Length: 246
Image (cartoon, rainbow, N blue to C red; front, top):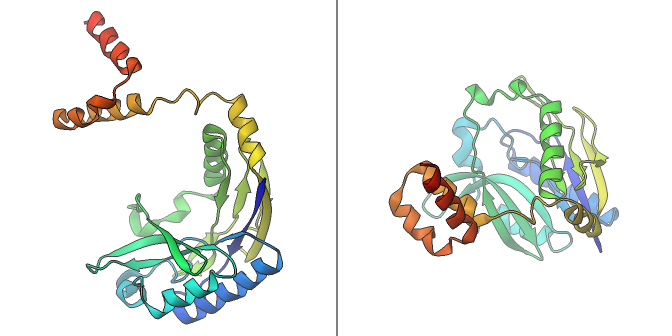
C-alpha cells in the first residue's frame, strides 16, 4: 500500500490573498494531473511570511469566503494549506490546515514560534534542516514531507529545497534550491514496517516513563498525581533504584 504525495514549492506574494489563492488553484490542478493523493503547501504560503501589522487583514476565519473556496478545491485533491487563522475570540495563529472532501479535517497551530531577531532565517542554513529531517525520519521510523517556500520578502531569501525523506533517512524527492518547483513521490507504507522491525526505538518507548520524568523535571507535585495511575513497572523500578542509591 502506498500514497502519492506532492509538494508545491511556491513563491507567494506578501499579503495578497487573491494572487496566492490563484496560485493554489494552479498547483492543485498540477497535482491532479500528476495523480497526487495529497498536496502540501509551505508555511504561510497563502499570505506571505513577514506580515507584521497586516496580520489582521489577511487572517481567515473558518467561515470566510476564502476558506469556503479552499474547501471546494479540496473536493478534487486533499491538501495542507499554510495560513493565518483567526479564532472565534479574535486571536491569530500561524496554522497548517488540512482540507479534504470539501471540509476542514484538522487545524494545527504552530507551537514553537521563532523568537530570534526578525526571524533571522539566515542563521539556520539549508544543510541544518536537511540534517534534522534525516535524523527525525530514522529516529521515529517515518516519512518526512518537508515543504519550504522560495523567493524574497524584505530582502530576506527563502532557500526552497523541499524534500521527501523515507524512514531510512534517504531522500526520495528533492526540489530545487531558491526556485519554484513541484515534486511528487510514492510513499510505500511497507518501508515504515521494515524500518520499525529493524529499529527498536519506538517499540521500546515507555510513554509513562517519559511523562513522569517530565513532571519531575518541572517539579509540580500536583501534576504528578494526575499521571500517577498510569505508572507502570518500569517507573516503579526506576524510583526504587533511586531510593537505594540515596
